[in-house]
Amino acid sequence: AQSVTQLDSQVPVFEEAPVELRCNYSSSVSVYLFWYVQYPNQGLQLLLKYLSGSTLVKGINGFEAEFNKSQTSFHLRKPSVHISDTAEYFCAASSSEDYKLSFGAGTTVTVRA
Amino acid sequence: GAVVSQHPSRVICKSGTSVKIECRSLDFQATTMFWYRQFPKQSLMLMATSNEGSKATYEQGVEKDKFLINHASLTLSTLTVTSAHPEDSSFYICSARVDLNTEAFFGQGTRLTVV
Image (cartoon, rainbow over the protein chains, first blue to last red):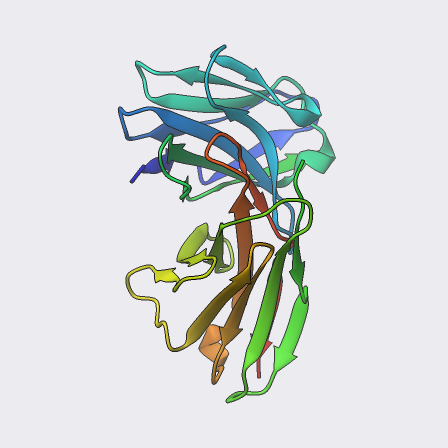
């Protein structure tokens, strides 16, 4: 099974500043990678996904992530955050042969004016 | 994208009673669904994999007699928390994937409070 590590548990950031959330995964086999966002008392919403192809993935709400196979990383970035980006962010991974997702511990992003 | 609907969104029950949570895939058939539990400020913990027409596969440490899972059709999985106790209070989330080449779609979650 995949192991996913999110290196930052909390990221405070000012409005309109850039943000980067770090994610590393463990397996060297073919891997699918995802970033999800969770607002309080809600399920998870997909921000973006990497299945194959271009290593730079663009998602919703201005987010993007880069798949780096040599560093086994899939960091999430946004050049300018809004107050509404305050939420919990989860990195997840699965192998190409398994329906199961492995989740990181999550990163709490708090955007301040 | 595909839609997974979970019901109820909130439930309060008395200690010792049972609670059923439903998870439906609205516009696709899901042979496999997943049930997660999430404690405050923590990640999702996979409880079990729900397989249509067969027994669920439980993760280590999850009591199968406590958390009953039924996946009777390709669009519905249910989780029943039996003889609930206050320590079962948590946020429960279900998910499903259309196939291996797509992301998982999540229900809205159910906040269970046992009093």
